[in-house]
Image (cartoon, rainbow, N blue to C red):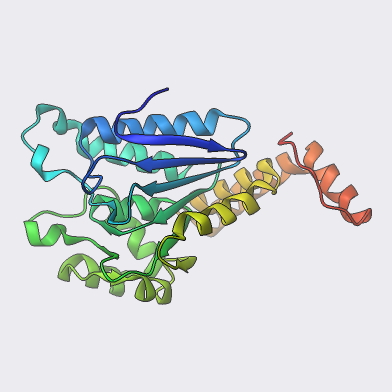
Length: 258
């Protein structure tokens, strides 16, 4: 499928979505819709084991909602559409990595928060933030919920209420990032993580993602039940037998997702 607001590439087991709506890859209704469709395409592709989302160029990952298109009647659907797409990313059965190549603000930061891994370039103008408070509005695509779960309420309120921006180094110290990259290497670093993930058993990846993501939205006992359900599925799989056999034979396992 062709997309006019992003570039979709497939490199072996890795699918790469590059947001491409210059100058700062802000989302209007077609752009957020395209992102959801691109994620669907990669999730359905059996050859894809991991997904990377990044922005074109070295200026911005995404500046979030396109304020300039506010008057567009279609944007009445934007609040709900953003949540639908970001929930889809967070609950993807395949790991999604945000390769943050520049600043990620508002909905752009919220997109990164919905991903399972985050890699960010260490550059002077690259920062993360929720500036909605300065516009008299609030983060509307999950920022008020995902950020506290990742860094705690105190720090989340500092970002959301004061409009504070975080550098890559600060975000790493806060536990928001898996890796800080040198300029020009953020996608390469994200690809290395994706390839490593691609070697893991797909059913086990799916079960772990499901248990962790859904488990955070419930209590310990319900979460344990989700974990047990996933465990019963993977234990009966061909991949589990292959993993055990490969361990005994002292070789690398070759998982097929069955």
